[in-house]
Length: 157
Image 1 (cartoon, helix red, strand yellow):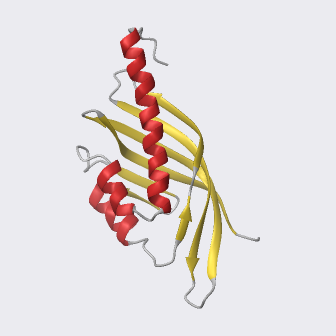
Image 2: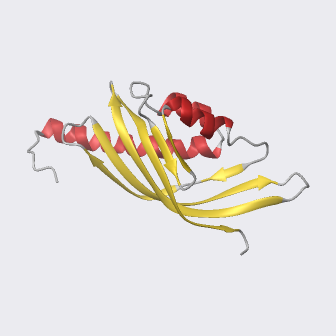
Image 3: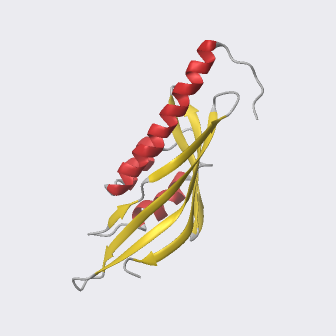
């Protein structure tokens, strides 16, 4: 726990930073729902720490934006896919120096992918989303993400 005493101006900055971080995490949800994965990496992720950026989940762990891009953008595209992973119950902790932060959310989402025969596979997904953030200039950026899936089941089961 941070025991440092802050000035009023520093406290205001810290409150503002936490709100900006929450806004960034929520913006990512919209980018995902629109299948704007490339745009997400270009606009929301770190440029200064591209080599150490990481994305992990139950199916793999990718380090470096190039590696993330190969898996997250090129490897997951599909015409007609519908993805929705809203986040809630967010908790954000700002580092004492105000240069990094971490957040944890819960997501109850769904993925629907066409089978190619006029049917689709619809899956419910629940799990935690943990994100590390880094401040670049005046803007917060995503540095690391782990999406830890708790349960997946076919809709209707």
